[in-house]
Image (cartoon, rainbow, N blue to C red; front, side, top):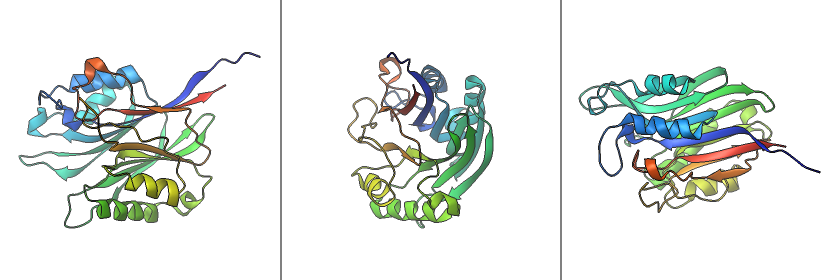
Length: 243
């Protein structure tokens, strides 16, 4: 019996470093757009997205990316930038967004952090709750942020059968976040995949984790030789297939 396999759903997370290259330190947002177009994901989680900041030509990067990808988007800036403007997380979806909110994950006196929560209704998959996070630099800070995030989710999200996708720049240097999500909260995150620094990846700082009926068929960093300097992180992708 022969089967035809097609990519049914693709998820991507990417810290774009404000569109500033990881090696040349030059602002070229088009390199980020080229990567995103090439990967053609259904959901895109971005972190460190600038809005009206001097260092990125006062661009509203979320709007420019949304226009280039022809995707609706939700944008929340959560950190003020010296000299004016802000930056934060942006989530893009090919499917209609049902609801959205920004969950404050700041642990004082640490840097402002947040998680952008979006719900979407996807054919063949049903309702999916998307959690686009940028966690802190300290291990105890990240643990507290995961605790706060789960406490702020709707009651039904605590049931293991609800479809959740949690991803982003988790700053998971030593794998502590992976242990909490996989062992304590029963998420599936695949094998750790190095995403930082982009020119020679050594650390799996970024992650994509799934719960409910969502089971990725592949989970990988794409080979992007021509755009490896677009950011200081590499994008992480998860594909879902349908036979």
